[in-house]
Amino acid sequence: MISIDNVTVGYGTAGFITAVDQVSLTIGDNEIIGIAGESGSGKSTLMRAVYGDFSTGLGIKSGTIKGRFTDAATGQVIEKPSSQFRDLWWDQISYIPQGSMSVLNPLMKIEQQVIDGLPKRERGGGRKALRQRIATFLAGFGLEENVLDAYPHQLSGGMRQRVLVAIAAFVNPRLILADEPTTALDVVVQKKILLMMVEIQRRLQNTLVLVSHDLGVHYQITDRLVIMYKGRIVEAGRTADIFANPQHDYTRNLIASLPRLHGKRAVDRVGAGA
Amino acid sequence: MSDAPILEVRNVSRSYRKGGFFSGTFFKAVDDVSFVLPAKPQVFSIVGESGSGKTTLARMVLRLVEPSAGDIRLMGRPLTGKEGRIDNLEFRRLVQPIFQNPFEAFSAYLPIEDYLRRTALNLKVAKSVEEADRLADRALRSVNLSLERIRGKYIRQFSGGELQRISVARALIPQPKLIVADEPVSMVDASLRMSIVNLFRTIVEEQGVSFIYITHDLSTAYYLSDQVAIMNRGRVVESGVPTDILDHPSEAYTRELMAAIPTVGERWSELDAIDRAYPSQSSRQKTGSIQPPANA
Image (cartoon, each protein chain N blue to C red):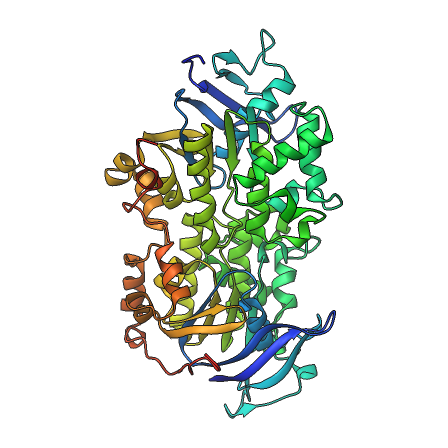
């Protein structure tokens, strides 16, 4: 369980620009939690604060985030200074950043990129056996073994995205953070990848945090939903409850503005006589 | 004004060579596609996945790509071939594009008003800077902006939604007959998406401009368009009035596209199968809790 307690997060580039303002949130074990909101609402920043990468000018001004990491042997929560997070990334937490179709190293074959991210405990058993394990794992994502020998540009956007989801899940993390993982993809591929992510979460019984501005995606796969607006959480609760009974005006507008199949059309709005 | 259709696309194909020059084979990105946009201004949507050929088709209508076969006519006059083809300047006044990423469509090193002014001057719809500014301001006002509001600003000072509205305004400067919009809202926030889509509809009705709307999103196509064509592997598999097609899809592919949309209200049936596979999970236990927002 990760407790975010009254955190204010921002960027110290030109003065301190606040992106997340006094947010409190508990991320439970074994759930899919969605964060929705428009660009600039602070959803990605909150995610990066949970991940704990402060190398890019990101800083926590006040408040605490606790419970990210546990001791592998005892299961007890351990707190560490952020400078020591590096060993625990891609071990206990994996992070699929926004625009992740372009985060793979263009000069490295996929196999090496998967292996590079692995924690020590996953590396044993020799290169050949490891390759075999990775290939078997990728097969579960509909990716053939020859993908391992490809460079990123030889794969389609959907395949690259599946590779990233696979890397994120392979280390069996407690927490997967996914920032707009399907936004650039078309709906058929998006659906495949989202179903895969749900299946992984149910199987590993870990936590998936999904950032998306598409409320339809949240409706389909998240258990709980957080709506952010201008750096704050304006509404949070069980996804089904929020859709059934949105409390905040902003949420109501978001839901009302969703285009629907078989619904009202713009042609009807303007009228045939116009 | 003539009653000739705005656009006629007849048996158009486009092939690309795949592989080496001698050993390569041809790949048909667009395969024998025909459709007509009648004289009455309207929105014609082309819906398909990545690789369905919808962008290649759009680029042929924009004359950025020459068809390998077939023939495209704009208001009865040929766009392709060598005989009697509309000259470039006139073509660009009649047909204007809107692209997916407005941050890539404008120069980052030019104030946006300069860019709009140059558009008017280059297209020779304005003879002086004053006239160009007047045209730019009129176009901006039809997207609920004004020259005053954008004066002196560069692209990075706008949000994606605002900048996309400016690129709609840019396209409106020569008062075109047809706008080809390739995924114009897929980079825009969901909450702003509908305002841009509604803007298209208003432009159709008030300014008499036709739109070709290229998208992978069936739901906005359904909402916006008078006619829709579904493309798969280079071919139009189904076309007609959106209500007819989506209420009675005759093609399996159309049904697959519809089923993949994350609709609010209809849960994907595949999720039930996952729940059955992990029964201990299907109760969807909720261990976390969320505090009400501070200072709400």
